[in-house]
Length: 304
Image (cartoon, rainbow, N blue to C red; front, side):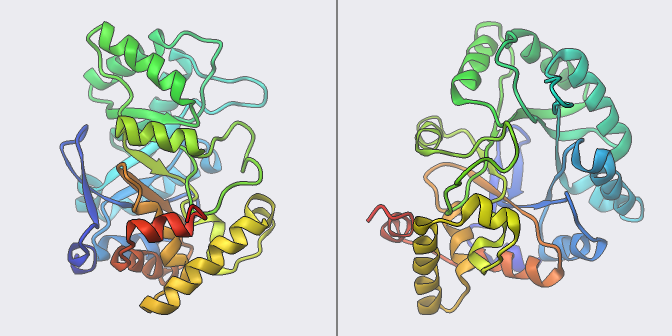
């Protein structure tokens, strides 16, 4: 527990759960037991999954790891996502949400702490979605709920409905956010934190769970097809050069500087990381020791 607890900004209180949550969240799309074990040893207390990851294999792998670790099962914060489309079928209805939530709870062997709607269907009214999520919360099947890949306007519409009807609204949002700007979507229907989205989060102070917070290893020099397709451009190469310049000065890696930039935003951010090895996990955790000034945050993003 000493590593995260010794860092000055390792946790942030997440009000919907009434507890501190580690500002780095371990993604479990592909994760090994050794990485999960090290995550807990380091003091991490949050995991991110989704029903669509491996057709439920991600949630089942987490549950299998929990089986011999009852303390972790009871103490860790688990985020998972549902209502993902199947082909051309959007699947964002109360019935789809209930079915996916049932499957997630069965796979995980426990209720869900934070449940995110993986996609939206703008053609549908928001009211029935807010009502059904409140019903699931009242039944103890989930503790808080939010969105992934929704527009800010739809979140505002949903939360206005919740306020008008005395219900809980969405408590968090999960777009893609990293120091590197996207050339194109990772997957169809996914959304990145554009300047407008960032301004909205700064205004509302809604917590943001940033997926692909390390830009697929772009700042570590990885040249996978997806990293090149989504992130390789002249501006991002300059951002990477500037991250490396700061890293050289303070004695860390460019990847750690880029992750520290995500955590340095003027609104609550929890960064989802996806290390494949214990060594990659330890490097990511080292970003918590990197402090950036406001001028450095702007300079890294080519704003100064």
